[in-house]
Image 1 (cartoon, each protein chain N blue to C red):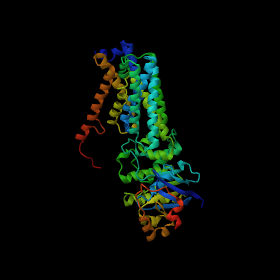
Image 2 (cartoon, rainbow over the protein chains, first blue to last red):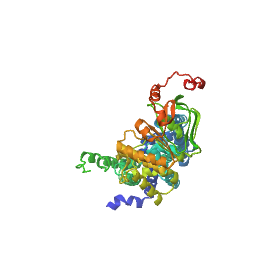
Image 3 (cartoon, each protein chain N blue to C red):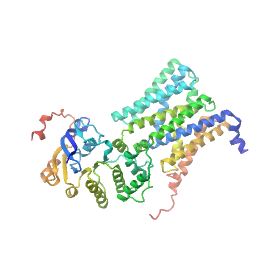
Image 4 (cartoon, chains in turn cyan, brown):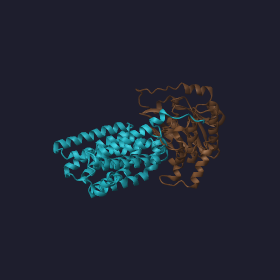
Length: 289
Length: 252
């Protein structure tokens, strides 16, 4: 019975196995990025970037149909352009990064909508908007796995400057010039993982598998290593449970995965070890010292 | 002794308004220099220019071939994100950047150095505490521990004893004297004249421009301090472009 509900879908259907593999790869790459987005107070930047890559993907789609490579490339170009322009403007003029990013992603969005409405139909764009994790072919799976691998490798390289820049940016500026390049690389990783996610979850929900796990992890761990591990695990669990949920009910897979993550998040807000509401209401007696 | 630092007619500021105006002078290697002046005198700006965060509007600052890694800078209002989940141990460990860089592992030697630095500032037992749980004084001790690990030839401290209790200031001042004894060049922006008179052989009295620079006793006179206090703090939005030759302090 339990076996039928929880394991059989994956042993019986290949598309479920592919979906599970995709969501595991997405979790490995996206969740650590989400943790850094959260710690650098850039959670909404992830959301803005998701909007910024949409027109690039749409253009790729218009040029070569439902070709994931073209859409990925278009999304990467649009995302990189917006991320790098916003980063450069913020660093060279002193305008806050959120303001420059908002400006550039709106430009990108407006351009994209213009191009689409002049040239295209919007039937298949629904696929871009909401993704389809149950239709993973070999090429798409490979792209996702490669992107996740790149993410982990690059993150390992820039981990130290990224941490130091988050906690004490002035110090990093006085000892090294690695700050700006690693920040730009980090933004690039954000874009890569968003593009990765929109093939499976759609542009609108892709950021969900990055931010929600990070939010969950923050309520259970006080150090960054623990947070990253917990974020990856909760993203994987959300992916698995979401796929099962969507298999057994009528809920589409993308929203099902994010809804499971959201449920975990609400649970963490209420009962989390570190700053959870329940813990704050009933803290126990104060200590001796 | 050879000059470690040379200010060559340097002007530093923001948005074309000078905060340090036409400063020239030399700091000898191994000097222990106090930089004194009222709020807005340009002390922090001078230090920011010195460590390379701020580009001079005019003139230049020569650091005698020092690499950026040979300069340890302790800013005043530290832009530290205290909610970031990092332990005291790891935070202080970032002071070893010049040794470890991006990837270098923390070997036994590095761990011993960190332990020594924490002991030197009296933070034993705080290794695993998140930095957000430290008090103001403990935070300052931790920052001194990181400066200690940076093992820099030039140490720049911007108001290091502000809002710090007497015991902590005394402990940290001992470290400053130790650095001086080790032959490092130390610059510190300070407000406590008694402390400057007691421990700093050389003083620069700054009020946008130099008011006096030399042996502390000769610099911190009543007239000089009064002159420094007369400095006008506000920028004049309609100030004309600076013509060096017309500058009154030059003419005087």
